[in-house]
Length: 79
Length: 199
Image (tube, rainbow over all chains, first blue to last red; front, side, top):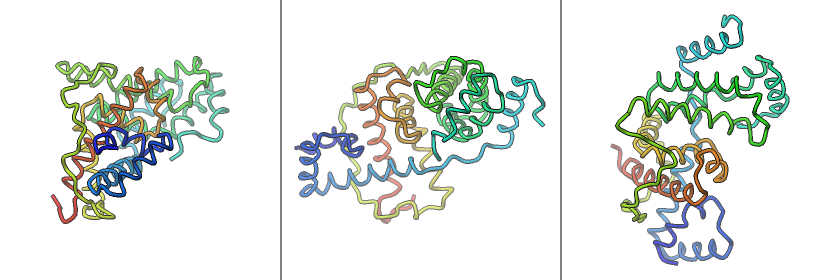
């Protein structure tokens, strides 16, 4: 397994979607390649940072716009 | 936040039968996520609100045809995505983005350039507001063809197959774009999060 080969398989490795033989090759490569280890670690953190973000509440004006549109469609008052 | 409600099947069945309260209850679970998605596609609050409004009205009209072959959430995300892309095209006529267009192959080099340790808690270097702004700004700067795949897979938690189906892409294309998106974001975030640096 070369560094380039590892990078091309990085997504599937992080998602646990590689077949066990290939995943084992990557794990072996990571035992002696510090640079690839840093790339794997920081890519994993990148994904976690975005995946962990919670959406902010809807801005009031957006909530009102949606409530109005939906109330009109449903034929009732939006309050 | 879950993207599948326990009583979702009942709510969907009621909504399909014309029960507006059931439809509103379904939406209330997902509206903040859907708005965030619309905002990240359009990059503009008013366009995002308009896209979401259009999408919700279309979803209400179309829910009769929803047969539960996918999660309700993936079904409605597809509608929001299409409306968001339409807004993006209207605003940027010079930039005819199409999610199924082939991507340029001139940057076929995947190899990372920024190789630095981030330490254990890089987010603690910044305030919550600054940290969120860094994530948003760098995501917004990704090409739409990469950004949308990343949004569906890594932010909305779609599977590779769901992402491919939603965007009308092959699984191989989704995987390639996802890898590019992740590596580009990692590269950009390294500038902020490498140890000892605070931009």
